[in-house]
Length: 86
Image 1 (spheres, rainbow, N blue to C red):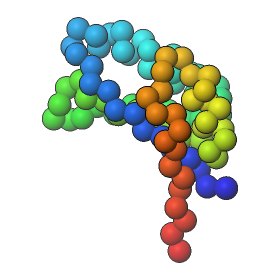
Image 2 (spheres, rainbow, N blue to C red):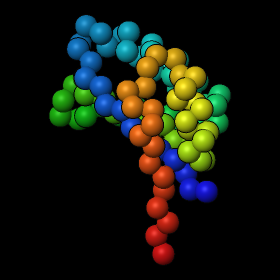
Image 3 (spheres, rainbow, N blue to C red):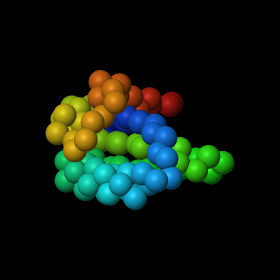
Image 4 (cartoon, rainbow, N blue to C red):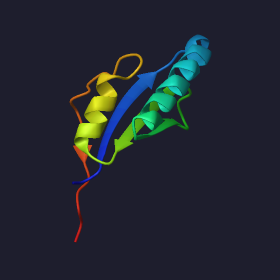
């Protein structure tokens, strides 16, 4: 089965940045312990605009990780699967 990916965008005010980083550090540990990868990127031209990526080997693993994730996942059912290019 193809790999699975989800994305979540957040706008974080400067005053909430430290709290957000604590939250995403815990989230990263959660996803890694659930057999997933987790990355966070900040938009180069817009400080505080973040996008989080969660990736798993399959949709079921990612769905289970979202269900048990600390904090809320905005749309846990929106999971993308890798497209094989031939």
